Image 1 (tube, rainbow, N blue to C red):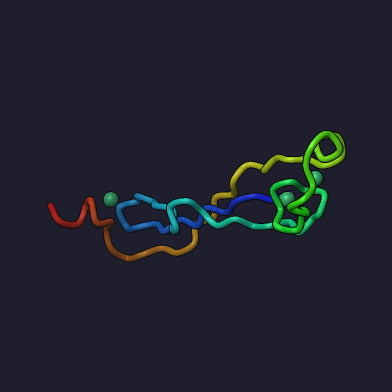
Image 2 (cartoon, helix red, strand yellow):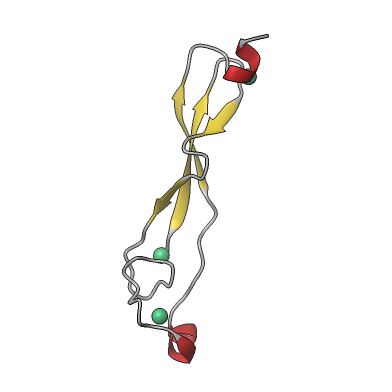
Length: 77
Ligand SMILES: [Zn+2]
Ligand SMILES: [Zn+2]
Ligand SMILES: [Zn+2]
């Protein structure tokens, strides 16, 4: 099923921020998945509820890149 990947940028101060903040959506491409883009847009109602699933798994956190300097919050002060 579909899920989200949170790509984290990790700074030298050990603060980490997701980029992009809303995460990246990974589509499973399954027409039986109601949140997939492959799900027919005209599919709805009881049939859809009983035969198709709609849930996303937990977002996956991936430390995407490490930067050798502090984050903007720690930087200026
Ligand atoms: Zn899906
Ligand atoms: Zn459906
Ligand atoms: Zn910081």
